[in-house]
Amino acid sequence: MAASCRLKPLSRVAVSGGTHGNEMSGIYLAKHWLRDPMELRRGSFAVTPFLGNPRAIEKCERYVGQDLNHTFTTELLSSAEAEDEPYEVGRAREINQTYGPKGSAQAFDFMFDLHNTTANMGACLIVDSEESLLPMHMCHYIQTHYKWSPCRIYLYKLPGEETYSIDSVAKAGLALELGPQPQRVVRADLFAQMRALMACALDFIELFNKGTVFPAFEIEAYKITGRMDYPRYPNGEISAMVHPKLQVGVGWE
Image (tube, rainbow, N blue to C red; front, side, top):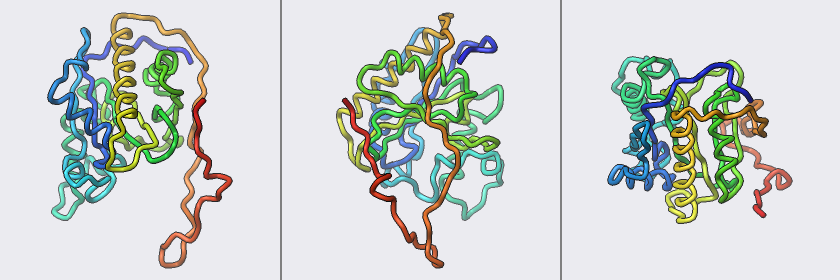
């Protein structure tokens, strides 16, 4: 991957913890940084931590009404406020107003989104597509400099599909997802790994802002090709499960 244009330095960076209210590493990190932001500081840019879904965090649930991380579409962000709308729709508008608006010149330059998963997948770096130049170079830098475990890359957006995640309100973004970690539980090792990954990513931005040249590279990534729901009975209940041959955990050397 090579740069086709010169990108501007980043000045405003945001970090969301608790986009899902039961994924505890990002919640605890965001709360820590809100109390003491010192380790987020770099010389050339400012970092703003925030809690993505405060009501879900209070309840320690993934969400209250609907998944916040699927609520940042143009349709929902531009919809009129309704009395019976899910809490997350209104919260998405607030986040878009504060850190966006999405697609505008006023939006934050970059946003990180911190997640945990129950899957045994280690550390995963999530980008919308390979066309996102700056996040892909950041992924390559992290893979090169982060030594705790492998960092796989997942490209989540189908061709022609609109971005819908919380970090899409910024001009560019990256989600970190670490597992396995049970919901509503903090694992000290994964907490420390997420903290170290963020430090590595912020170091990359500092180098980028200082004019460091990052060479072209080849990189392996996992790309979504389609979505398929479980088979269901006429009443909507799921009628099947993942076959044991496909239910394979990831092991580390």
